[in-house]
Image (cartoon, rainbow, N blue to C red; front, top):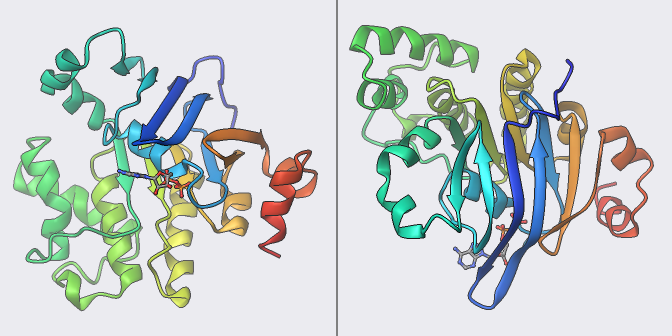
Length: 259
Ligand code: ADP
């Protein structure tokens, strides 16, 4: 697929973010093209998750701007109060972005189908029938067409994570952030979740930001790999460059731990 990086769907500009005295992102800028699949790799604590959470408006930067699909998320010059007060604006932005976390965060008292239909009914205003139709299609896509009446506690971690993916997909976001989505899973359940993500990625119609420690997965699914360390992007490029011909000793050192 041809990527149009001259018309990015995501623009991070000079983003800095600290937690207390800890500087987590350091003047970071990044453009992501529509439908591009970007994998973020790097040591723990290098700021990868924070980059995703900023996009989801779960954190706000101390400095810099972020634009998604032509809309400014946080803009230091527009005062913070105004942005925070503008719920409609945040709501519109959030509806463009789906995020899947390490923990599945399903509603425990709802069956699988209701977990997936809740937001389409209450946020998008779909009828119950319409929401069910969409939910069933998404649950089939993630291989859970036979589990719709089950409750989360009756499912394996891999199945729960696939429900979480269906729940995000049914909102038809333009951008999906996958934040170490297999880190909490038993090793034998990792493959089924990665396979679902690979399939979604191969359909092409979604921009994806993938924070991952699964290097083979990153290599297969991503158009571009970003190596982060110390709150900055130290190296980036297509998978064959990063994994096969990295120019940065820190990238090479990091990757050597995975062989
Ligand atoms: P990564 O995803 O690369 O492991 P993170 O973005 O999760 O890195 O975190 C970077 C650093 O910021 C870590 O040291 C983490 O402990 C710290 N951090 C992240 N979120 C918070 C928070 N809400 N409060 C305090 N420290 C945080």
